[in-house]
Length: 159
Image 1 (cartoon, rainbow, N blue to C red):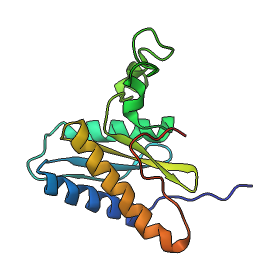
Image 2 (image 1 turned 180 degrees about the horizontal axis):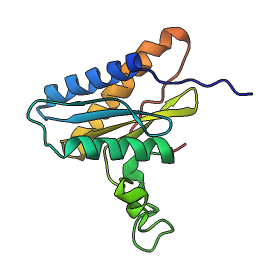
Image 3 (image 1 turned 90 degrees about the horizontal axis):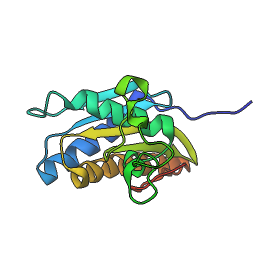
Image 4 (image 1 turned 90 degrees about the vertical axis):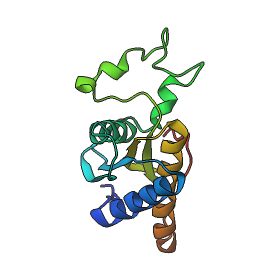
């Protein structure tokens, strides 16, 4: 039997708070969603004035990152992004009733080598979404380090 690590609201809140703080710092209104390993939301926040489409997009990105165990932008990064025309997963974004997001802003949450969830952001450009997402991952890494746990904090995650 395998023991698993599971995200809870406390950890999700740390991540969302850090991502929102970074978003404020860089002057963008984001929606941030943290999901569990199955892609279901644990916590979501839409900043005041953020787009009304943000919650669904942020959830889609987090869902995709958790479920496919990779940063969402890697699906369309040339030349080998699997969702690019002519590549093996072209059209994958039509999967899961359109929930599959194949563009920047979704990152798997990897603790001690295992994907335990995802964080998705919507509201900024790709660089802004990435900065806020990395801030969320870093906050989790800082919180879990005293327990001897390691969180992967990088933009290009593929597990």
